[in-house]
Length: 253
Image (cartoon, rainbow, N blue to C red; front, side, top):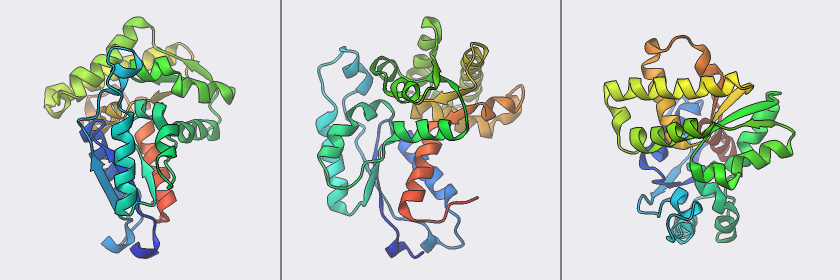
């Protein structure tokens, strides 16, 4: 399929900035192509100045991120995007309102990952996500509606997940060799705890955690084994796969 017959992907980026960059990389890697022209067009509008989604959902800030998200969606639609992808799980809380602001489809990241889990025959999942996502029940609701048991981190574990997101990824510490190793080991520990409490798979339910997973591939020799990556479902990979499929590009097998 030629590029002009494929649908153009619009990405509301900057939530955080590197996650949207990684989404573009994943989209590119997932396309089966022999030449540039077999890849879909991708329009990214990065809005890192959007108010913090978690702070707003927890009532720690009265700055509503919705107007920024709606404006970005409208800009991408006018620029020629045929559908939109938002590489931020917490922002999915505003999915319905964002969809109402445009006439093109906005991919439902939450529904996509729930369908992925269901298709694997998994009956229990652990969730690692922001406090905002956990409090909103965004992921938990879709899983429980499908009869899938949800295992959430205990209080100290959730603090550790938030530290990984805000202290390791958003600050850029994982860009350093020692920081990447530390983040991998810490996330592996939290994943193991959820698996020990009955989760069959662990959802990396924050796109910032996807960046630690990316570093895991680069520094795989520091892991105890390869089972950890097989027990995790990366929500950003699910989004990229759906975006490529929706674009009409050929998906790499």
